Length: 211
Image 1 (cartoon, rainbow, N blue to C red):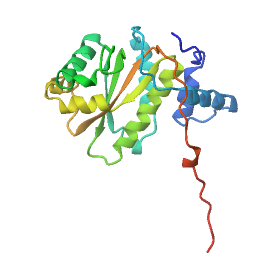
Image 2: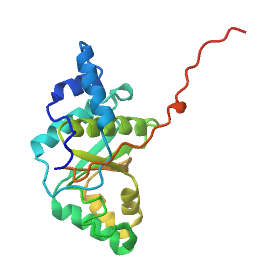
Image 3: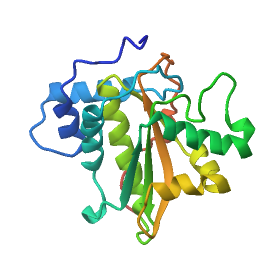
Image 4: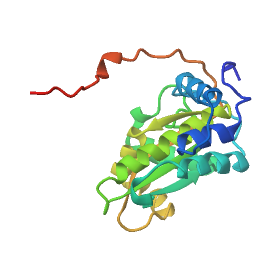
């Protein structure tokens, strides 16, 4: 793995405590979490090494400890780490959308070895916010363990638009009123992308002005 700057030695409990709003964190702990957040990159090339389910359990536990409205936990999560299932979904989509598979890629999910599918509760108008918070926790905790990820909406959109993919989505057994929203592709990184620029001008402080 070439991604040598991943901070593999970070204690996972620090990341969990910070993100889930636990009290008692020190300035040093905050520095560690800040470094994870600033070092994380979206990964689109992965090795063939699979993620153990023990590691996935730890990552997903961080995910479900994300803040969410009224603790409704208005999401459902389905994990696909079976290579045959990943390939079946990809092949079904590419039969109708050949351009979805990039040259040299094994699947439409950037060759990821694990897919985390996230569905939102359509009966709750803020469920997509909860899903976003869940996804961010998952990606940050994965990064702290040396695992890359990429939030993907387009492959999911193609799945939902492809008639042949209905069986795969049905197999995920989402509850009624839940809408598949996006997936997180995950795996051990096979690239070291540079950080992309961020526009700090998007941030503005608003002070009270007395009239």
